Amino acid sequence: MKQFWNEKEEQFLRSHYGTIVGCHIAQILGRSEKSIQQKAATLDLCHRKKRLRDTLCWFCQNAGGRCSWSSRFIPVENWRAVPTYIANDNQSSFIVKGCPQFIANEIIGLNKRGIK
Image (cartoon, rainbow, N blue to C red; front, side):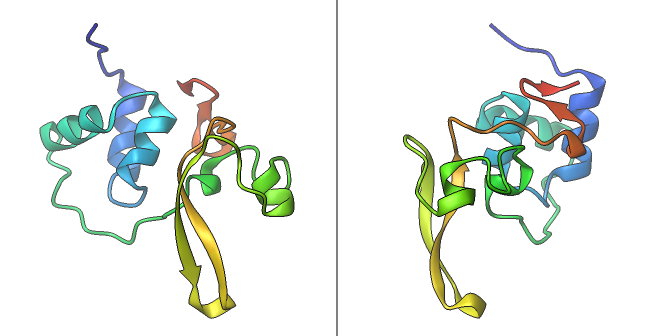
């Protein structure tokens, strides 16, 4: 079933497309990556080339010690993450692309299911 975009979702996409990785926007809004790409094209946002914030953790209420990864550096079961290396800290890490414990951070105007 087709899900129509509301004004707050469109505003979130306008504000964050090009600064948050598309798969993160999709998880935050509860939409597919394809839907995000199509709407970005409709809104003429595809030309944006900004530094992307890599990990989904930066937008999660469970960051800061409330999940196994942020508290003890133990990967969360069933997450989608890509191994990476942080050169300035000389350590390995992960770029989290999807996580079953993800809860959108209230700071970005979202609740657990997406836009308020």
